[in-house]
Image (cartoon, rainbow, N blue to C red; front, side, top):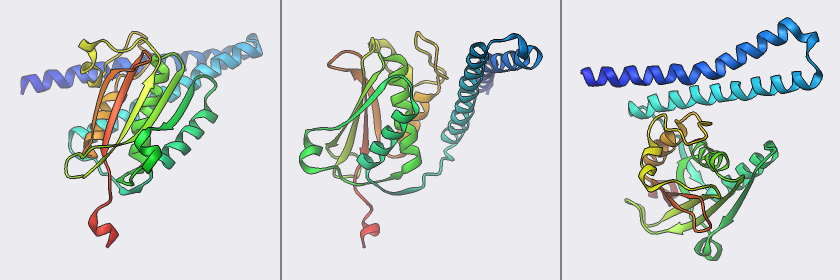
Amino acid sequence: RQRAERDQATVLSTVAHELRAPLTSVTGFTSSLLRRWERFTDEQKRLMIETIEADATRLTRLITELLDISRLDSDNLNLRRGPVDLHALLSKHVARYELGRSTGTVHLQLGTQATADGLPEMWADTDRLEQIFFNLIENGLLHGDGRVTVTLDRGAELGDSPESVVVEVDDEGDGIPSADREKIFGRFWHGPSNASTGLGLYVVRGLVEAHGGTVHVSDNEAGGARFVVRLPAGLPEAFGS
């Protein structure tokens, strides 16, 4: 019990710290703009408002991830499963992502087997799949060199499924040391940049495992990190009957 209380206190302390920094920025810039609007140039105002927007987005993401962690840790995550064409889903997702970004590029491609035979459908939660790959792509752009390559392919059997879909998310950064490759999936893990909430990869692993899949990180052959997600493929027999 004492250990659980210590763990809870640590989490609360960390959450408070994570919330404080962006909130301080938002309130500080908002107060300055309200009190001294006429003293700032248009360029200064624009930069301050952009900072407020970025910190508000960070806060929203942090709160969303905290809610997801609560559901995952209490086994209270409800997956709304249905048939999913992952290639079509990620094609639309990447297209929207590219339109909304001013920096960085994301390239989506099919692997050898998927090019020859196509990808099997999956029985999964569309929104949660988008969340998984948004987090991985964002992580690659944040810690890499501004370019991420996503490769989809067919894989071997996984659990009760006769085959799987394998997704590799490659960045061109410095890579992740072997000693840290398990730590990065823990709560509040930060890389050298300290730019993320530290919760995204914890949520990724939880959502992947909730789908019966696996995720791990290795070296990208071209340099950088490679996150490999394997998810069960195929539809339930009852769905096709």
